[in-house]
Picture 1: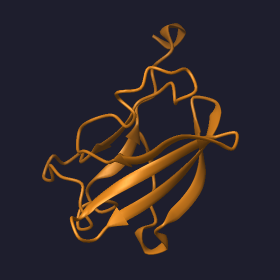
Picture 2: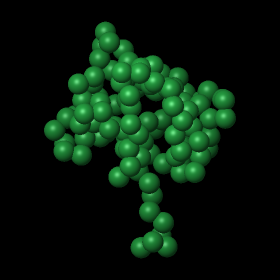
Picture 3: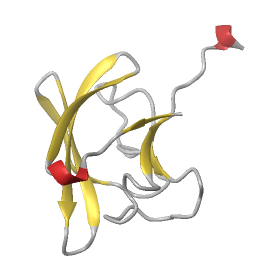
Amino acid sequence: MEYIDIEKDQIPHRFDVDLAGEMFTFEVHYNADYDFFTVDLEKDGEVLAVGEKLVYGLPLFLDVMDNRFPKVPVIPYDESEKSTTVTWETLGVSVFLFVIEEEDEEDE
């Protein structure tokens, strides 16, 4: 599985990422008071989401039914299943933002 690398030492970390052939801009922020991360999302200079909280095991932008958003799920997850939260201690160590690419039926 592919994942999006977050540079915690560069937060607020702003970067472009290709998701299912479309370019998006992510900006990751950290709330030190409550130990959580949020993501802002842009596409072609248009702000699509601000302050989307990273919640372990739940796809980002889950509550949005809009074709401007990524067509593939991006999910904070720990492959070892040792961590179940997205915190400063876990993000980029055991928890990563996995991009769940759907397999083409032709490849099966």
